[in-house]
Each structure stands twice: as structure tokens, then as C-alpha cells.
Amino acid sequence: MRLIILPGNSSHNKEWLEAASAAFYERFPRQHLQYYQHWQTEEQMTDMNKELDRLVKAVGSTEGDLILAKSVGTMLTLSGAYQGLLIPCSVVLLGLPIGFVKERGWDPTPWLQQFHQKATIIQKEYDPITSHQEVEEELEKLGRNNFELIKIPGNDHDYGEFSLISQYLY
Image 1 (cartoon, rainbow, N blue to C red):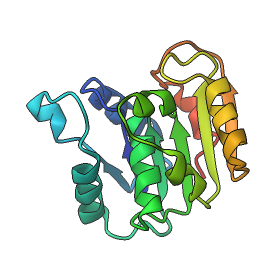
Image 2: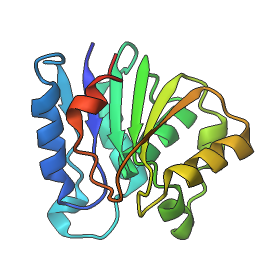
Image 3: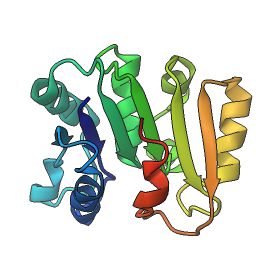
């Protein structure tokens, strides 16, 4: 099984990406780390279409793979699954940024509605991007029960709790 790690939007997530890789390397030596192109150009936002295209070209089939995604990486995962481009056997989503993407004109509703695989969402109780309660309300509104929503303490959007996250990687 290969671990595909998709980080958050800003360039400081490169450190998170590499820390996550190191934390899970012993269990998952086969990995793909997605370094976003806009980190090199200092653009503000990930180009979702470009990054999804790069990801699919880099990894090929995702059948049998595990995706660990943080923030914008969660949206990349949901969008890719919605388009039939990503079909992993397991997904762990960290810090779902529903409020953030809606503010930028993206609507993740169809991505969430059409995501039929089992997935774990780990959301900090007071995540400033989107709180646990906001994610819970969104999932309830959509009637989705294929997501296991885990609330962890915290009021940031960092998700560096790798020993806790490790419990959900299978």
C-alpha cells in the first residue's frame, strides 16, 4: 500500500508534508508527496485542476492506496474522487476547509455528496478555518454517514499530531 500525502495550501505546509512523511515512513515506505507548483511561484492559491492533473500523472492508479490529506489537499482528494480520477482504498482528511473554499467561490457540496468511500475526517474543535461543529453540521445537512468525524482538541489548523493521526491510517 502506498501513502499519498497531500498538504495544505500555503508554502509552510512543505514542512508539514515532510514531517508527515517521516512520521509514517516506517509503516508506509512507499509514498508520494505532492509539492504544489504555486509554492515556487509565490502565487496565493493552489490551482486545483493543475495539481490534480499533476497528481494523477505522478501516481497513476490509486486503487489500493491510502490518501492522507490536509486542508486544501482534502478538497483535491474530494474533487479527484468526484471526477473518478482518485479511487483510494482509504482516506484520512485533516482540517476540512469548508468555510475557506466557500469564501473563494468553490462549492464542495457535490464532492461530499458523491464521495461514497469510507473516510475519516479529523477536525480540531476550534479550527479557525472550519470548526468541528461546522463540519458536523455540513455532513448532517448532506445526510452523509460514510464519513467518520473525529473531534480533537485545538484551535489551530496545523494538524501535526502524527501519533494520533497514525491510529486512523489503515
